[in-house]
Structure formats: C-alpha cells, structure tokens
Length: 314
Length: 262
Ligand SMILES: Nc1ncnc2c1ncn2[C@@H]1O[C@H](COP(=O)(O)OP(=O)(O)O)[C@@H](O)[C@H]1O
Ligand SMILES: [Mg+2]
Image 1 (cartoon, rainbow over the protein chains, first blue to last red):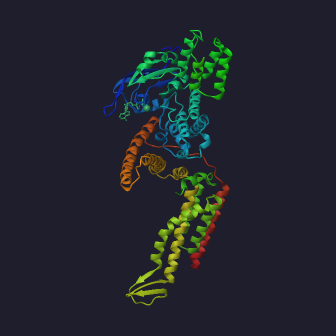
Image 2 (image 1 turned 90 degrees about the vertical axis):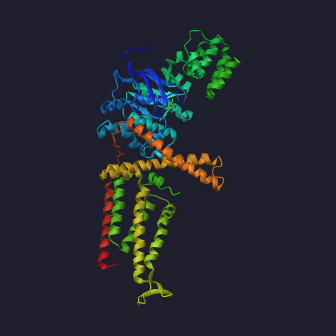
C-alpha cells in the first residue's frame, strides 16, 4: 500500500501522558493513521493502547506533543472537541461501561442526537446502524438481557449511528468466542469498505496479521515498530523485543519456504485460503498427498495445530 | 425472586403504547382513591387482576405471590383499625368484645367496615401499580415520562439507576462466586469477612465504572443532557376507546355508590 502525504486522517506527534497517580502511560508516541485504512495497534496489556485511544478523541490531553485531525492541530475547546468526537468514535472494551441505557434503541440514538440532528434523521440512522450490526432483532430486549457479543454489537451500533470517519475499537474481540469474533471482524470489514478508517487494538497477532493493512506495535508507552503486516511480522528482532509471537501463517510460510516448497519471492498468505491456494499453485512437494491432507484439515475446519502437524509430516 | 422486570419485557401487552397503559393504570388508581367506596375498590381489584392475568398473560401464581407481599403489611394495618381498644366503660355497639383488667378489646360494625374499606382500597391501589409494573418496561415508562414533561433530571436518574442495578447485581454475583469457590462462606466468621470485602469491592467497582461511563459518554459528545429517542409505538384507537368506557363505568359506579352511601 502506498500512502502519499496528506492522506493521514489522524496524526500524533511525540505524545506523552502521565496519569494523576504518576504512571507514565505514553512516552513520546508518534504515529500517522492513513485515511480509509484498516489499522491494528498491537501490544500486550499495559502497553498504553487504551490511553493512546483516549487521546485520539480528545478525552485525555497530552502533557507533551500534539494530536492532529485531518491536518489541523487539535484545540481543546468545546466546539473543536465536539467536532472531533463527531468524526472519531470510540468503542470501549467493556460494553457494560459504555451502555448507559437499558434500551437498545435509546442507547443507539444518544450519539446522533448529541450531534444536533433532527429527530427523523436520528431515527433513520438508528435503523441503519441496527441493520448493519444485526442488533434490530433484539431492539425489544433490555441491554441487561443481552449476551456479551450482543452488547458489543450494540456498542458498535451506537458509534456507527454517528457516522464517524474514524472508528476506534479497543480490544474488540477480547472475551468473545470465535464465532462472535468472526462476526465482529466481518462487521469491521464492512464498515471499512464504506470508506471509514477502522482502528482496533489487540494483543492477538493472528488477528492483526490477517485483518489489518497497517500495523503499529506498541510496548511500554512507545511505538516499537510499524508497517504492513507482511514486513512487520517477519522482523525477528522486533518480535523478540516486544515479546510477540509470530502469526501462525507467517511461521508456516517460513517453514515451507525453507523446505523449498515455494519460490522465494512468493507473496505471504494472509489467511487460510490464501495458504491453500499457494500450496496448490506450487505443487512441488508430494502433491496429491499434501493436497488431500490439507483438504481434509480444511473440511474439518481445524486450525493451526493440525496444519503445523501436517507440515511437519511432509 | 419475582421476575417483574422479565415479565415487563415479555408480556402480551408489551407492544401496547406505554402512555395508554400508564393512563389506564393511573386513572383507575385515581378513581379508586377518590371514591373511598368498597364497591369501587372491589371492582378495581377485579378489573386489574383480570387485565393483568388474562390480557397480559402474567401467570396467576406469580401475580398472587406478588399480591401476598403487601398483604402482611395490610394485616397489621387492618387489625389496628378493626380492633378498638378502650378503658372506658362506655356502652358501645360491640359485635364482640373481651374485657381484661379494665381494658376492653373489641370490634364494632363501624370499625369492621372501616377496616374492610381500607383493605380493599389498598389492594386495589396495589393492583393498579402491579399492572403497570408487570406490563410496561421501565424504559417505556421513562419514555412516557419524557412525553409528560417530567423534569429530565428525575428521568435520567431513574434510567441510570435502573440500568446499573443490573450491572451492580452482576458484579456482586461474580464477586460472591469467586469468594465462595475459595471457601469464603464456609463458616460464619468467614462469611462476615467475605461479605465485608464484597461490599467494599462493590463500592470501588461502582466508583470506577461510573468514571468509565462518564468517559464513554463524553466520547459520544455528552453535554450534560442524556438525550435519547424512544422507539415509536402505535396509538390504538380501540384501546383508547376501551379505556374511556371502562373509566366512565367506574366513575358512574363511584358516583352512584357515593350518592347511595354504600
Ligand atoms: N486510570 C488510570 N490511572 C492510573 N494508571 C492507569 C490508568 N489507566 C491505565 N493506567 C496505566 O497506564 C498504563 C497503560 O495502560 P493502558 O493504556 O490501559 O494499556 P493497554 O490498553 O495497552 O492495556 C498501564 O501501566 C496502566 O496501569
Ligand atoms: Mg486496554
């Protein structure tokens, strides 16, 4: 992906932040978010991801450094902040700390009403957001009777209804089962395909690798590395320094490359299907056997361990 | 536990316009309080029970269990009014009396009527409120309150309190579970200690969460006013007509009872 200057929607320059209790959460963070991208902020617990997110929407004010939105420095007066919050929506990690209303409908209508939109428009937006997130089916149920995944979707709908140009999601897949996590991720893909910039934080390297088209790696209040997922996750030193595991697809690709199964310049597979495709296209190993193996594994829908085992057997 | 909240979201009248239900319940309550007539009270009680159980489909067992709650308070009240205690040797129209050490306990026809009136009126009033509580979710009630221009501070407080009762309850259950799997409630002494720390933790968590909620609200442009829209309900002419007829009937019964003095 090539990004020209001027295509940054949010920029942070040299942000430092210290919590009142003296915890230095950010230590000179600089990053530039490309417009319309799918961005993952990867880092372990306590790296400072949530703190950074709160700066992107003007909730926290940095001790040092500046935040820029669409090229202009953020001023912290009421009007500018309201304008920023209209454009940058945050979905927080814990839905119970975001849902203030027992009614799904009321909850979703809150954001767009704050933008001062007329009632008919707000109702339209609520309906659209409910349709996009699949939350319409439980509009009659109170939020305390929803499952965790459903609550999460209501939270996302509440932000979506504000039509932000950037949607920030703090650990969207934490605590979700695989099926719900997949649903959320495909929802993000859909949101991103409408031109919205989507930023998620996660500590799941596989998710960041498969989903994002640009990755920032954070540790101890610093950005340790960034780039497209292919190059970031192949950086052994970076992975080692930040205590991150390699995504399983990268690992397998490297093993197979070493075994000479692919030409050295073959592109890295970004998901399971791409891996199978690659294997099919480069049927250099014991072809039939391997394809059968992989097809079986695929049919059974198993992941990582089986694939790794299959390859070790080759 | 009685699941009033659950019934409110699942009963057969859940799609009826909340204002219609509120008007029905409150108007009936008003009439029943204005006419202190035993007949009106009995009619109200009957009406509300039928509507709640038959129309809204609330299981009658649950309904009567709920009705039993005010009953115990009622018994105490009725006894104090129904039984006259006196030390004077004045001749009264005792229906039955007992004198011991110069004190006379007894019931008169007047006191019995008064007690019955009180019991009827209380139960009828409670049945009106139960109807509302069992058929109308709190979120709909507050929406109706908004329409009735009740001060928004009061409404917002109601809504937040309602929402966070459940969050608090969930948190308390989690803490309780994690304590009890570690034998936190194995003895009386442990129980006291665990309960103490549960309470303390609950306060801390609630405080922490209120901070986070505020942050999340601010992120969505909160400006001191929790403005929200409620889903739209259809107004039913048939319902309004029915409510009008029923209330008029009740009114005329009340007036007749008043005139005839029953
Ligand atoms: N409200 C707070 N008060 C004090 N310290 C905090 C607060 N929130 C977070 N921290 C600290 O700031 C650091 C970064 O936290 P956070 O941004 O939540 O990281 P992450 O989201 O990556 O897990 C951690 O050391 C954390 O303990
Ligand atoms: Mg966090």
